[in-house]
Image 1 (cartoon, helix red, strand yellow):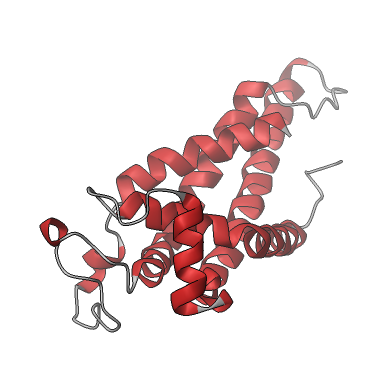
Image 2: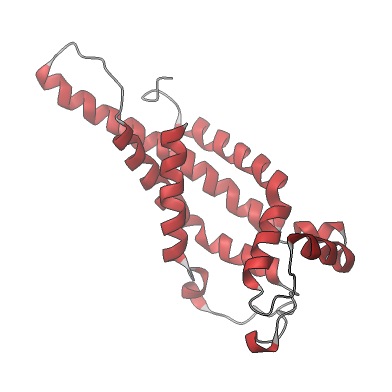
Length: 194
């Protein structure tokens, strides 16, 4: 595909739609992963099955989708930005390659990128998307753990409305460094492998 002439809007919309479809299909597993990872020791839920059964019993089937709305609000710009910025970075790199090669060969039309260049484009795209959308991820995680039973050593249950106090902008970017360390290389590998 000729990425130099591909509309960034098409990349954004395609990424956003793909991200939504993948999110809705896999959301209960993301919820279970977050609950299992945030419960501490001793564990409230020893297995994924016990967490699943308790969620359905206490919150109903809809409980498996707790926090889906902020997740979709997050994934639309995240996937869209990741795909859109990836294609933009890729287009810029292709143009840079063409500029470099034009001085050596006036008739060169090679638009290929090295795996390392694709990796860097994916790394940059993952970093940009993560930085812009991280606040939505913080909100999503808080919806997911709301109502989770906790051992007294880790504090009380996270009750509804527990996050109503103002934490400022810093609160929206809690965990940005480990999140970026995870998201940026994941985006790079995804794009290089595709």
